[in-house]
Amino acid sequence: MRKRKMVRALLMLVCIFVLSACKKNVGTPEDNAVSDESSETEELAEDNDTYVFGFSGIDMENPYFITLESAIREVIEKEGYELITKDPASNPKDQEAQIEEMIREGIDGIFLCPVDWEAITPVLDTLKEANVRIINVDTQVKEMDYVDAYIGSNNVEAGYVCGEDLIERCPEGGKVAILECPTQNSINDRITGFEEAIAAAAKGFEVVERVDTNGEFEKALEAAKEILEKYPDVSAIMCGNDQLAVAAKTAVNLANLKTVVIYGVDGSPDIKKELKKADGQIAGTAAQSPINIGKTAAKTAVAMLNGEDYEREIFEEVFMIDKDNVEMYGVDGWQ
Image 1 (tube, rainbow, N blue to C red):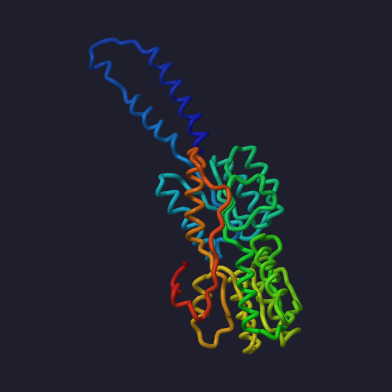
Image 2: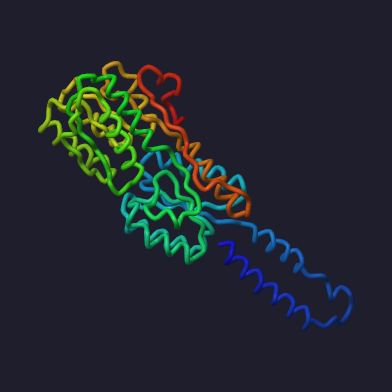
């Protein structure tokens, strides 16, 4: 957008100079009143300083991405810039089409959470050709060489703390099910960290089932139902995010199973409310802060486009929230 406005401004300035050269002063001074050309030129110069950013999350029905976008928008608009948001609704083809549309709308930079960390690669190339800066947020793309900066959580650590907590709760080991989403590298890292942790347990844990949920609640719910029918003696369900954990909790309640423990990642208000329930199956959530991630990403992007120094990789801290400490973080919002 900034580039397009500059071109328009230059064309108008050329027209102004041409008209000024052709104008003849005739008649009285009143007939030759000073025009508003100078003020119009000043307005155009100010307009040139406006950056336009795009935001492409994974699914804008997920409260995490709603909060992330809101935090980015707060910083961007406070700086006087514009943010265009589009919702691919977990569809990689829609994400590709929407990003191409934003390029045509003249974005200078994009905050990108890829629906599919591999399928996004051709779009990254298109963004580079259009000279759009790429701020990769929350979940990494596979080809990180395209990215100008990455801001997210330490997702391996998020999974690891869940695994450590499970070992304490189930020192004799047990059967474990996993609800994952291989197209999202953030979830891949969380599951990797979790498996690394339980592999170090003194007593063995057996992963009896793992299901690709595509990151969707309904698919996770059906998958969890099938897992519990097949393995009613499962000890724990590790979920790639809190939305999947809510689906697992629903399935456990429907099956009337009391001993299954469930882990999520995010630290969402919904999960924290579940943690306050005395008889809830949610054991804990590895919390991250979409507010901090969003604000850091936005500040990084502004510094980048202004030619200032910025960090290329920033990993926000994660930590376990469980029944013992949930009161510290509140249940009405994100930490």
